Length: 182
Image 1 (spheres, helix red, strand yellow):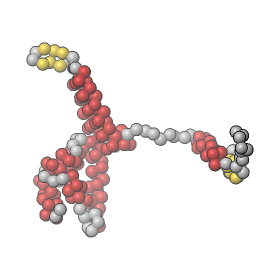
Image 2 (cartoon, helix red, strand yellow):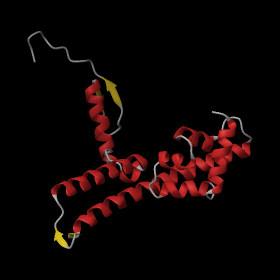
Image 3 (tube, one colour):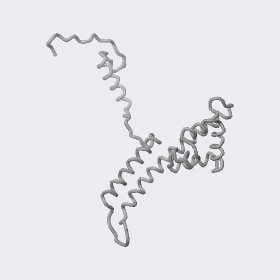
Image 4 (cartoon, helix red, strand yellow):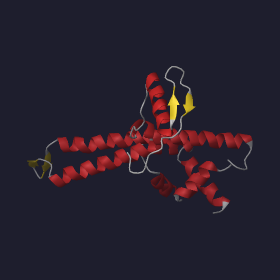
């Protein structure tokens, strides 16, 4: 890809309102692919234009790129919220009685299934865009005494006797099992 292509993409971005326009699009939940297509380039080109000047640029250019990246990431996190809201809209549409040609009916099973799958997919994407807020929480918080208990358990597994008061460990000879013994 040549530098003139980058300049053309940058000109397209500026014509739409600058990088603030890109951030607004991301915050609304648009994909990088759809934004790149509107600009007439690929995702890779858009990322490269965003990061242009990071490696060989002046300190001011590098600072501008780092700021663009930071604002990009913030917009992506906001886009995660937009996806979760879109999931709610899918279910809200099903919550009402559907009117077709004057006849009123309840949503069909395929309509409900489609809305559920769309919502699940959007929630998955939201978790990838903003794992801190929408991702699965798998960490376990230990109270102060829990950390000491965990350290003691680790010591037992390694054959170290842990002094409960001092927390110091002394090596203990590994247990030798007799053949056939448990």
